[in-house]
Length: 204
Image 1 (cartoon, rainbow, N blue to C red):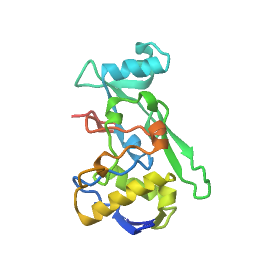
Image 2 (cartoon, rainbow, N blue to C red):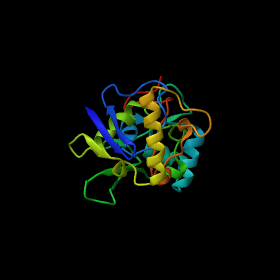
Image 3 (cartoon, helix red, strand yellow):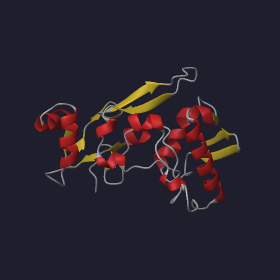
């Protein structure tokens, strides 16, 4: 699917099948939830202890309720899946309400696993590119204000899209490779990294 994103600087086109590329620039997380649906985060003992304390549970009770065994390590666990994704994945209705967009939220975001903290949304991520389809409302055109309610996030995405369109890397200085998460996503988005397997499969 070819998606068009209407920005103040013009229209940026993204092919959601094959539109991602190695070393693509980072973008602010748009909270589509695809990564949280597809990946099963691997928990270190420190992650397990932190999450159990956050939920006010003994570690053994937390493990029994929220994790599954990881066959390649006795010390690490996989977060359990529930429904369509991570057991802690939630969806919030769009505050505007008119377009019916749901944004992903993490129920334990302040204490999320290390693999989630290390994930950086970007044009190099298949999940992020394909997640754009959720903002199209059945068409092809996305208004950037619908994708990113915060002006700063719109500016960062515009800069990243221009970098991607030019086929180059971010220049030195305030590069888009290290963009922060949008303010809402700092509280709401769970993000896995490479050290995990697709949902339902153990990590290599």
